[in-house]
Image (cartoon, rainbow, N blue to C red; front, side, top):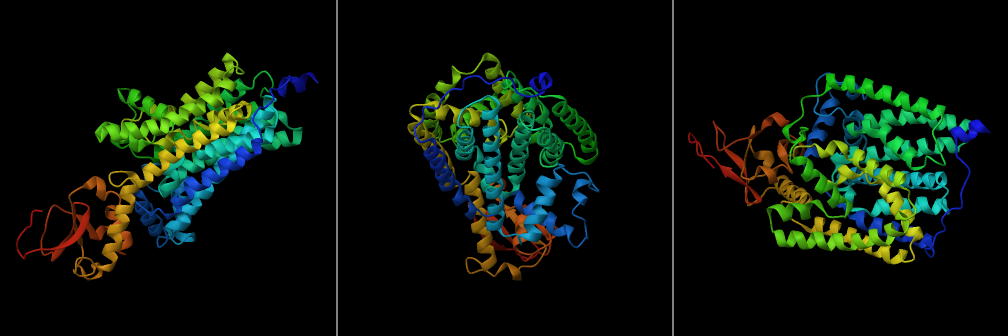
Length: 498
């Protein structure tokens, strides 16, 4: 009995009772809102790095590369994410036939599994700290997490499927860690045995998985009085740390030096990234922040307020009833969880996206869900939260260039024009190769890139060249100017400086 008390959960105390009426309706309502928000993402085309990864997956087939090759690459890569990148894209290209709808449906499925895993963690945490109506707490946690606008980019951009995978593995790891001391010996052994496996899957999906052992300790600190890790859990924890050390050593042999925008520096970027994290917490979309910086500033500020104000009211209605029930230790554990979960992104020199906070926001989503169950105005809070996410997500989808989705749809329009001919000019299949391309706006053109042109026009990427003007014996070139594409004939013997 003494050992059970030491390794497992201490005696229960009288739990807080829920005040929300019909919490099951809250779960159902959030589920409907989440589907309404995210189903339109299935119509998003491939864009940007998607084509680069598709080209890489296609090229691996004639070389006869094993599906295990990405786990031990022959050459250095920018990111060693064999499960989150290479294997994932081989599945999209080889199994799904490079169909963008099927690829986005895959990401949608990964997002759904990740949200359900957060719900599992929510129910497990409710059990660990003796909250009542534990299953409903988990369902609400899944719903709150699902409706959050932080998922915008991963659901709309196939290349960020690795971010959906890291949420799935992280939430399952945390649930297994917290649930193990609560379980019978056989189940406890199974859960502890799964933790290192989930750790490896997370490491192969995204680098931020190195933080998982610290995040598990944060959860233990939150539930310490009633549920402490014992010898089986600590054995699994030290095994994970050893696996991380091995992974870090291998990674040094496989990755290239980081690109400038992914460099880790300790300068003013820390404050900018900290402000971004605060913005993500209030559902302020990235595009609104961009507009506030580069213009139109007033429109960006109004949009940010339209998303943040109902989110602030939601946090007040759902958070205030919970705050008084948390100890200082529990509050500190949640704060450290958020800071550690977002930790690497504080130092990024020049990148800031909502989905960087997906892991950091797992526990806050669980707690806000619990706050909803304690609130006497839960249905009002849910409506405000849904409104905030709708304003953030739909606004981001409606914007044209230079927004992310605006660029994606622009790129698809240009590629469709190229496939059918344009402006009465010859179709691209009649244009000689190498295909010369002149670009007036590289930022906009990045939605297509050399890889996109090569993929959609069935050309080797080496036959696509970005040039300043007509060169050599070329008959003509594709000119991407002012948001449109046209075919420009070259005058023989003359260089045309476009």
